[in-house]
Amino acid sequence: MSHHDTYLAIPKALAVIPGNGGARGLTAKLTSVEVGSPDSVYMVATFCFDLHRRLQYLAKITRTLAEHIPPEIAREMIADDEAIKAGAGWRERAEAAERIMLRLHGELSEDWERELRRAAGLPAS
Image (cartoon, rainbow, N blue to C red; front, top):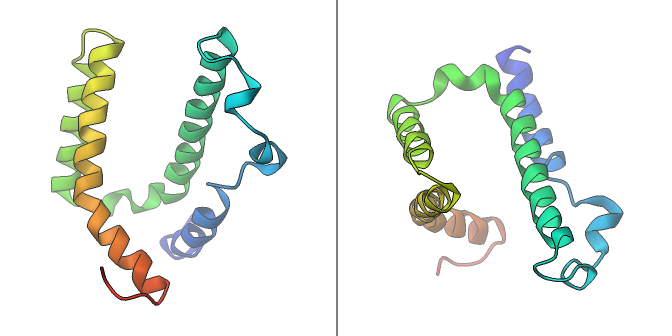
C-alpha cells in the first residue's frame, strides 16, 4: 500500500475497525455471567483479545507510516514494553501496564478533551 493510499485508508479504518460490536454490543454483560465464574474470566479475556485484534488491524494499516515514528516515541515504546516484560508475574506486569496507561492518559487527555470540545463546537473548559 502506498503512503497516499495509507493516508486515505486511515480515517476509514479509524471509523470502521473500532466498530460498535454489532448486535452483541446491545446485550447486557454484567448480568449475563456470574462475577468470578469461569465464564466471567473468559468474557473479560474475549474483550481483551478482541481489543488487541482491532489494534493489530490498525497497526497493519498504518505499517507504511512506521518510518515516520519520532525516535523519542519509539524509545518510549520500547522502554514501556521492557518495563512490562520485566514483571516477574502477571500482577507485576499488570501494575506496570497500569502505570504506563495512566501516564499516557495524563499526557494525552488534555489534548483529547480540547479537540473533542472543539469538534463539538463547545468552548474550552
